[in-house]
Amino acid sequence: MAATFTWSESNGAGQVVTDGITNVNTGSNDSVNLNTTTYPVTRGQNSFSKYIRAKFTGTWSVISNIKFWKSLGTLVTDETVKASANAAYATPSQTGTGDSNIPTTEGTALALNSMEGATTIVYGGSGVSGYTGYIRLQTQTTVSTPSGAVNQKTYTIQFDEV
Image (cartoon, rainbow, N blue to C red; front, side, top):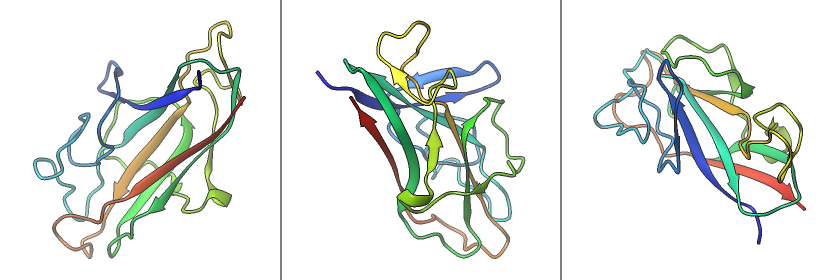
């Protein structure tokens, strides 16, 4: 049996974890599986930061070389997506994260560790969760960003499995 993964998101002051999320939409509310029609990002403002991670299940020996990047989706005028790998969880807010622009190629991808900080996820290892470290995402806009929906984006995670 091979490893499989699902996306997981954490929200709120108490770090409520939801595994198996259906989208990574950003918006004007800290909620999982966010509906952007109900909670759009107001132009000139930031979205709430998102804390997502991959959760591995199944059977494997070692998962390594975990990378994350935006592989598809054009940004609209003055829209940026900020990202950080292995971020410490904090209550999501609209305050600018100060992170770098999200990488857009495999060669510049964010390198993810295990939730415990190791560069690999070893199956059955003592204290190993099967989760990667957090990826913090935030959409930032200016007053020049067009109103209405932004373009859909595709995020890619890649890993080696033994």
